Image 1 (cartoon, rainbow, N blue to C red):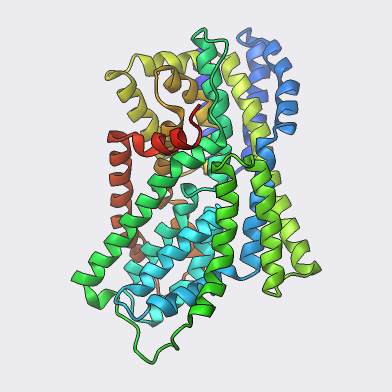
Image 2 (cartoon, rainbow, N blue to C red; image 1 turned 30 degrees about the vertical axis):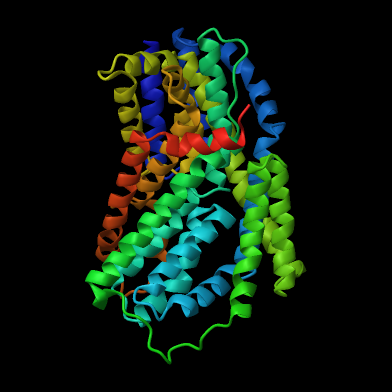
Length: 458
């Protein structure tokens, strides 16, 4: 009976989320409702909920999660200070006269924005508003333009420092320790957000390189879809103006990421450096005043409140799910699948991919990963490699029609002349690149595990 209740709990949450109810309240409310029904039926022990205060206190005192509002603040401040707009204008002027240069510029700026903000929705919307009209005006094929923007906008999933990786790193750390405790290892090893940042760096850069290679190939074999700018279309950009546009955000990214990878600062400390650096950058561009600061703080508060409220709701959900024996049921299901850990990993990745159509990465990270993570890690999978695989998998899901979140974000800001079919067809090649990247990472896990070993070798 308890296993059936766990399945029913998950199914009800899924249906309510599809109906559009708020995620955090749906998770917590459904769980508490099932807990009361289970208690009445004699299938649930309220003692499981006695652990809830400790869990909530653990969330409140988790220093790693303090990095979330700081990284959000950094990203929103950079957005308000028009760094993205300046970057795109400069890169377009530098590479625009090369065939396909504007597409390459959009991809590179998307990579820098991903490393600066780590927020997929903000990057896609910003790039859509800034670059899509320019690309269409310059004669770019609508499918190439929309596909490039969507793909580069989702790089915030995998390019560190990323909010996705911060949250995923914290959840995987707890799952890794639980997996070791379940195996009787009472001095468990840990995995940090810094490990995940280092592990995601090479796959992320390789993914960008594959994007660029594809765009260069299109420019070479289908030149009419990605024309070069006319010689008199823009004034040539000077070295000084290029450095003024590129160096400040690059230095900020290097300061944040370098301090983490170099062991000079924790992710939270580095995030505070990023937040202060973003304010200084905005002040240097004369884009900083009390009104802007008020808007940035309000946006940061809204996003951070959403993240932590979902985390609290997910904590209630997971406690009740475990109370019904759902974790044992999932473990038995995955361990009995044919193919051992490979079969289990394929099933989990497929489920996460499908859930990515209807759930954001925050819900999947807080709800699904704590359930399946300990089981997969107990099978001997490397936690850093697993985390990077999950991040790329969700990134692919957010690009895939007809429900990919990135497609909806761009559809919301695209001009009326762009139809949804153009966006769908435009992202297909990039989805293929994502799947190739997943396959390469699956075959060569060292792409994700080598760099953490270099930076954090004992």
